[in-house]
Image (cartoon, rainbow, N blue to C red; front, side, top):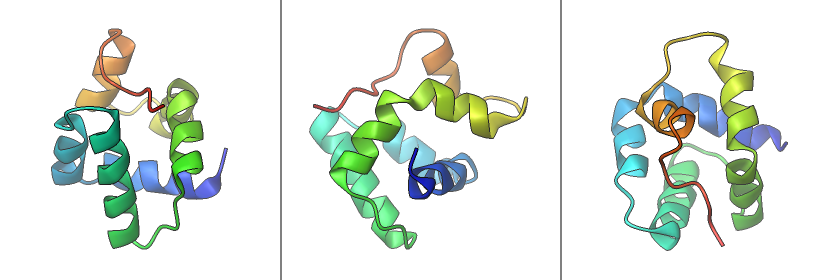
Length: 88
């Protein structure tokens, strides 16, 4: 997995406001646009392909970065089977 995606996800875990923005996205296009914008604002060079790959492997990414920390709302939604992570 691209290290930019991993580092971006770590940044998202630390930023409640950004996490809320991502959770509030209306659809896949909105999610992609929000991640691209937020990534650029935080200094990450992300492409749509990077984001798709990260979302396709989101469960592994969560497991890799959580280190048994308390799960955030997004991660809880993933564990319970909810949450949008498919971007086509």
